[in-house]
Length: 323
Image (cartoon, rainbow, N blue to C red):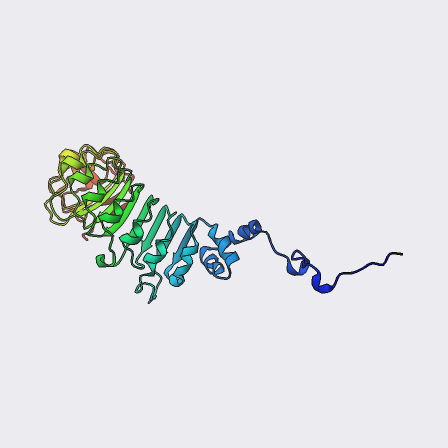
């Protein structure tokens, strides 16, 4: 009779698939994590390298500022394509003071969408590395918080949407290279006809100018535009009926302090659904032609009468107050 020889207990190989120590496949963990909101997923990534790897498979991340304290985690989220950082209520943080935002974002070279809202400090050093960006929005409470210049913006040639709010250091040098741009929001900027004339693919434009440096010559070329918002703080813009009358695809028109724009051009923009005008001598002759309007803000323009308003039967929002 053969005797069964058993191996010593110490030599037995542990079976991690046993009921007491069952390890789920990565694919199943990813499926489980997909049911969690973004913030809990962020904390789970800090538990271990295994969980961090699982969270790295997530392609989009949207974090409140309170979660930004662990900025070093970003260096491991190299697969991120979309990132949003926003300020949370009552948050006093060292994250803003030690420039962790700039260092962390510089690791995320696969980003195609970046949205920063009143958080951290970002500069050319990190932005210049994000050459895959197609959407870039960066807003801060004050202009001096940002150090973004032509040096980095000129490298973002894949941009289709740029929203920098108040920033003073982006000029024609970089803006003229962004020929794929569809949506542009730059306030307190000093762009000129040279760069604006290059942006012929623009469909949405929001500009605030301070000098007479954008004229009919460039605006008349933006025939694809559907959303046109422009304000001239000097109240003497050289933009006139000559260019506006050519922008017949406009559905949203917000203009302020444009004294040379009259009924002659506005009456031709019959596709408008959202109209806002300030300090502009518009009469009922043009208003009555815009029968597709659903939102109207005239800021107490006394030249508008009951006769013109009575024809606008599609209006859902009416504001005649002065701001």
